[in-house]
Length: 256
Image: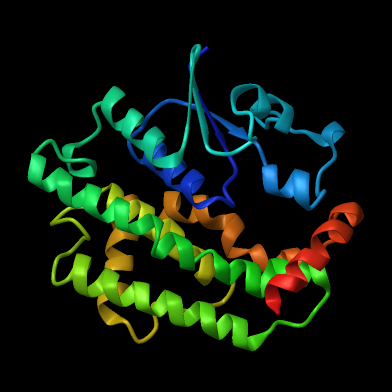
């Protein structure tokens, strides 16, 4: 048994791991868990599982909270996106620019990764909930004031991303792409997927986006983001009625 990566490409950290492994030619077996689509949306019955996919029960054996991403390397299991990326970079001795050996260059990557969790990551995903998922569960029209509130928070984070981290550099932590850029770009593709053009009127960030995509490779980038770029198609599906009954009132309270 070799390296197995249990991923749902609707998840931002999962996309980062998928891109990193593909870009660095790391041999792995892709286990398509589809936690969100299977458990919440009820989009695929267990009898329809395709080769290479993984059932949530398999994930539970390795991670009791059924959370993705999960790495299994022989008998060793690991969760959490950044931890998995660091494990892969060390085990497979990936190019130094991803996570530099120079202590100060590495510290700048660490600095961004620490900031990322409570800024970009706490704001960007909300656009998908506001524009697609909450209306899907509640049947209520999109509350424009909630989206505006989310976009204002994201705008603040984007300004800090640009002024504090990117500045006039090609990439967030220096002259070459790093794990900082990878974690940032997968997160920012969430609002893009639901129709929020966050790169418009932000020329420095838009140019950075193009450089990151080029450094990753367009084919791998689009492959990883195919699901999120088509996320609005979820508005036409029928979700699990029991979950809709359970979650709908809760989400309506959040919107008030």
